[in-house]
Every structure is written in C-alpha cells, then in structure tokens.
Length: 205
Image (cartoon, rainbow, N blue to C red):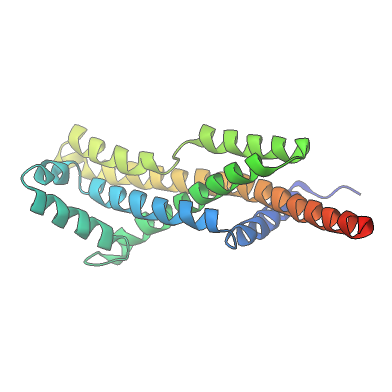
C-alpha cells in the first residue's frame, strides 16, 4: 500500500534532518556554514537599514570598521530589537546551513566513485545553484521599497517586506530539505563503500 503524499513529505523531512545531522560531523560543512554565517549575517544587517551605512563607510577606514563591527555583532542580537533581530537571524542560519551543505556535497561529489552517488551530488548542486540565494532578496528589496514609496506607503512596504521574508524562509526550507536528502544518500553510500572495501581487504589478507 502506497504512503499518502503527506507521509512521504514528512519522511523526506525526516531523511533531510538525518542528513543535516550527519553533515554537522563533517569539517567541510562547518567551514561553509561559519563563513556564510559571518558574511550573510553582516551583509543583511548592513542592508536592513537601507544603503546609508554603505555611504558612511566611505568616510574613513575607522568608520567603516566600526559599522562592520556593529553589523557583525547585530547577528547575535547586540543592540537589536528582538522582533527585528529574529527574522534576520533565522534567515542567516538557514542560508548558512544551505551553503554548508553545498560545500560538503561538492567535496563529497569529487571523492565518489559511484556514478549514482555522483549524479546525486550534481543534482544537489544544481538545485542549490538554481535556488541561488533565496534569502538575499529580502534585504535587497526592503530598502528599495522604502525608496520607491513615500512615508505614507511605509505600511505597505512593511507588509511586502514581511511577505518576502516568509517566502524566502519557505524557499530556503524546501531547498534545505532536498540538499539534506542528497547529503544523507551520499554519506550513507560513502559509509557503505568504506565498509565494503574493509571487508574485501580483510578477505584478501
């Protein structure tokens, strides 16, 4: 008897979760995650207030360093209003997990001998690249909307910005599900091949 679509969907998320947990044990994942976390988190905090901060950064090196420092610390909620900080932090974490998975899958794909596993890695990479940076549009669009609409249109700007944020999170979660599934397949296959090689090596000896 076939499983209902919802059950299959939940199984997919369960598999993706296992894949992500497996990925956290890999150094390559954390390299991609931490670099992405610092970069995207800082960038999103810089863009959250419009493009004025970039203009101020041109005044002097000291001013630029101070603005960058404050933007980086804002990732952790320093001097931030909780409900302003939470969406940016959540999106940064999701985006960083995606980048970490992409880095890991790229490394795993290069080291695989199995055609099927290699194909899975290529598909995962294409999906991630096709999705691009699903969360970047949120912070890029918000300041532009603020420029296009007058003060009386700020409410509409805020509503559109919220909708874009929700869509960005949904896209990121869906991309993370697929990448997590591919990660699970590749790591499980990699472990199987290692055990198989060990058994064959033991028989030969």
